[in-house]
Length: 258
Length: 216
Image 1 (cartoon, each protein chain N blue to C red):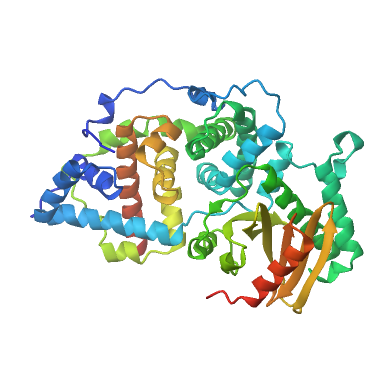
Image 2 (image 1 turned 135 degrees about the horizontal axis):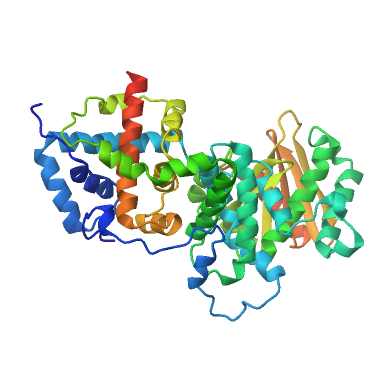
């Protein structure tokens, strides 16, 4: 062998160097020998190549469908429907069950493939919105910049939602989160309006015809639902119906690249 | 941060942490608002939703890499979340991710010890075995070119990482997939920073060589 052998100990600092764990002095102490030792430089390149490979093929992931619901049930944040009894009755369960009734009664069953999926959708969306209001942080990614929010969804869910900027119209983007609806992880955008929040959930609805926003009210929450380009949008908020109506119209009318 | 020196792992003493799986050792971050005595209620649920739920994806991913199995990973995450929920009142308000991952990791090991004791046993002595087997004079005949590493596909990368002993695998996942700092990895895995560094270096080198063999 003509090149210097690499010993375990001489390569250890390379990893700490690439991981950004060294202070400037120690980083220099790693860079200096690498400049003159091709074997060390090659080792550094290999580790970098592996890190690129991992970033490319093993992105951070969203929890599998249904896990969040399962966990929430386990810690008592959500009651399994089958076990609903008077003892467990709460205003949240009431709101959720009214949502189911409202969705079914309005003939919205055509929105998704099967009635049971629609029940779940209305149920889960209202639940998710109410729960997000209970938490002091209603969002997973907090940003008013749609160029931050949209990429955040990439890699976490199959398709990032359409994100538009409505700050000028007094509906500033607050952030986004991932909800689970009908066992699917779906993106929810959160917009603000004065002191209220609007949750806008986008559910894949391929094959469904476009439809104009249909309003309804569930226990103080207004819900607008419409279908556009194979996506069903659900806007949920406690803002006045007129405001949610305006929001829906603005969102639909605004191109995403504005 | 500064890594002061590169002493071997033997020079760094472990802190004698208990891996009892409960995550209780994080009681060292007591909350100062005096709400510890509150009964579980909306406050705990709100804290859980804010501190734990955002990290469900990372929790599941770590559990899957440790157990090697999706269904088991979901069981582990559910169990870990229950433990986290019980301890939610005694956790600080800062970034909860290392804490959540610690509880998940401990729960996963409890699961492994119960269901696959051989997997855990093999891990304990591996570093000694590897050190004994490693001869500094060995030529790195299997070390592949950078281009060979770059063209590996997702399946062979996953297989190469999965083939690592659990301790190395979890360290690599925490750093290279989930982006934790060395300090945070120390916190999650309960080993000194020297061990984290040597596990990372060895784990990565092993994966690189495995990919080299697969791709050539």
